[in-house]
Every structure is written in C-alpha cells, then in structure tokens.
Image 1 (cartoon, rainbow, N blue to C red):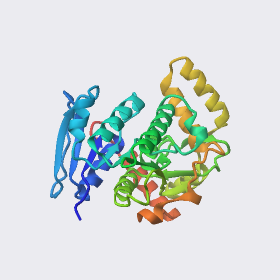
Image 2 (tube, rainbow, N blue to C red):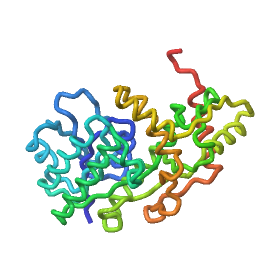
Image 3 (cartoon, rainbow, N blue to C red):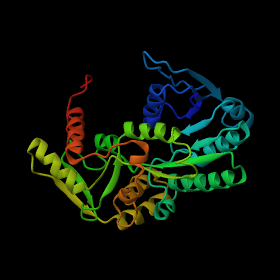
Image 4 (cartoon, one colour):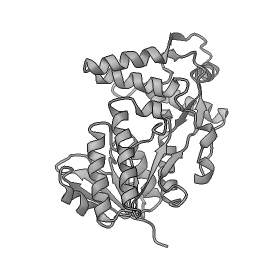
Length: 314
C-alpha cells in the first residue's frame, strides 16, 4: 500500500521544522509549500529516502494553491498566528478543489474548549478555521479533517521561561500553582501528526487529544529544586481571571504581545479551561507513551543544561 502524499505548510516555523523532520523520517512523499519570493531554506535530513519537492505559491491566488496541492492526499498546516484564518481558509478551499482527503489545521493547543475559543486574536482565527472546516467537510464528504490538541509546547516554553523560569528561578504562579496543564514536546507533536495520518479512519472529522504529561507549576518547581538543590524561588502569585481582563484591555490598546501571553496563561492554568486532557487522551490509539515524573525530570535536566550553557557569542 502506497504512502499518502503530504503537503506541509509552515515547514520553517518553530513547530513546522519538527513536523518536517518527522514526515521525512516516515518516508512520506512530501511537498513543501513556500511563499513565492521567500528566502526560507528547506534542509533535507541526510540519508533520507523521502521524496521531497518544494513549490513556491502565491497565497493570494486560489489557482496557485490548487495547482500546488494537486496530487496531495493530506495537507498539514503549521502556520503561525499572522492572518491565520484567512491563510487557512484559502488552503481549505484549494484543498477541496484539488481533491485533498484530509486537512490538519494549525491548532496544536486547546481548541476543543469553548472558553479558550472565545479569546480574540489567534484563538478567534482558530475558532473560525474549525467552524469552516466543519462546514466544508459536511458539504464535501470526501474532504475530512483532524484537529490535534496538544496543550502547551513543553520543551519550547520551558526554554523560554514561560511556564516557569528554570534559569532565573522565578515564576508567576497562576491560581495557586496546582492546576494541571497538558504539555507536549515539539517532537511528540510531530509524531502525533504522523500517527494521525496513519490512522485516517479513527481520527476522521474530530478533535484528537495527545500529551506527554499533565503537570503543575508547583510540581515543576519542586523537580527543579531536586535537580540543582537551589531552594529559593522568587514567585509572584496571580489570578488568571485578572490576567484575562488585562489581556482584553491590551487588545483594545493594540498591545498584542502582552495580550497573547496573558491569554496563553489563562488557557493553560485557568481552572475549568480544559487543559488537562487526561480523561480523553488518544495516546494509546496513536502509539504515543505518556511521560512518568522521572521522564519529566530528565527533560527538565536537559533543558536546564541547555539554557545555562553560555552561547559561543557570549
């Protein structure tokens, strides 16, 4: 049985690079869509048997997208936040016309939760994308979708100090610090993409839930103290309800960075926001193990070693 042909959009982004590597490792025939005139390079991993082609497209041209997606069975979107709905709507329309069978939108968060989907900015775009996918799939039964929910990008956020700051031993502790939050590394998210593609019937037209672990901020600070023996943490308590209120005001003032970070905090650590996927995981279906605490500790040791190693430029 031949492997499906995959079209990947956003291959050079933070998550897109991991997805690209995983698709190549799985030897899928692969087309990478890049913006016409762009300067991004697509490095092919060595010793790969994958067939990879790069197609430049004009995202404003429906015909350009249809031609680029011709022959693709699955479209995987790893686009960033800028004009996300408009870009994905164009991709969805072109996918339907090109005969694409499955569309994976750029979700990779907690888009199944209605409280999260009501946020503006990125979340509003994701909500519109989901609703549009549902309408198009209903009108065209041969066109299907899978929406992958992964929670926070675990390793990436730890490196940036967004969950807790492992380098400085500081943290904004939200709602007491004991709210569990589903977290998933970039590599596991990429594996989930591959697994969804290889389980087409089981993941047809629905939300898929995966995580590496459900962790709390207090748990991560305890593990960090165990690793390096430094007990002192400079913590600032904060209520996510207050953070959300300030984020809406930041949107009104055009301070989108502050707003985005605040909404992320509310989505991750706000009680009732559904960020712990423990009761509805698809890990077993997709062959993805769940981390034990010793695995979380090993990951944190690696992150702490990385962020505390001076760069060559310093």
